[in-house]
Amino acid sequence: MNLIIDVGNTHNKIAVFSEKQLIHKHVCDKEDTKDTLSLIDAEYPEIKDCILAVVGNFEEELLSWLNDTYNVLILDNHTDVLFNNGYGTPSTLGVDRIALASAASAIYPDENVLVIDAGSCITYDFISKENNYIGGAISPGIRMRYKAVHTFTANLPLLEPTPPLTEIGNNTETSIHSGIMHAVVFEMEGFIAMYKVKYPELTVILTGGDAHFLRDSLKSDIFANSNFLLEGLNFILEHNKH
Image 1 (tube, rainbow, N blue to C red):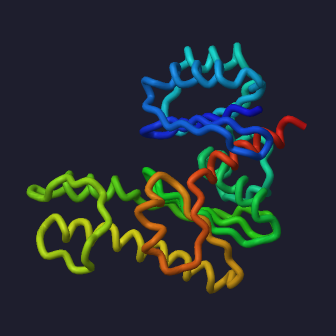
Image 2: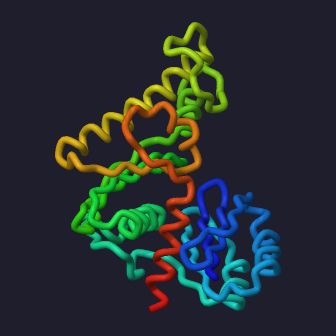
């Protein structure tokens, strides 16, 4: 069994895999991570190996505990992965994007794949059918846009992300919802269309914490998979056991 830990900017995702099968998943606040790991360790004593992908901050005390308990692989730019990395600056490629590209390589071999991750930022990652990671794009995430509208204006309120009820907002709140949510959908549709000009046979994956806001609004054919990054981390861990 494998323990997968994805340390994000706001929350930590912890999963347990038995070979390729996800059997447990938990999203926790930073301060609850140690208790969550202790409970998982007690429930799944068969776990031997662990992969740690850190985007946010991770306590040294927790890292020490993990090293004492499991065989730990810390994902970084030197880790052996499943694809050919053609990024112009490979040392700056985030571990989250490495995991997403690995999942695309493992699950959709011999296909052109665009992975859209709707998280704190929205990332676009493309891997070719020749298994080459080319790159992609990074843009502000949904919550970042809501915060920007509030922070950089004098009077606009800070709202919680909400799918717009109408296309045309008829007050300040509905106008903000319409402006932000439709803009994100139009952006994604635009990126998909742009990639399809060059790669007509394109598989599109939508993942990330805000994917549920968007999947029903996108007109393009997509596969929604909220666990895509975790699956990618598990593939990397399995790959490095050999």
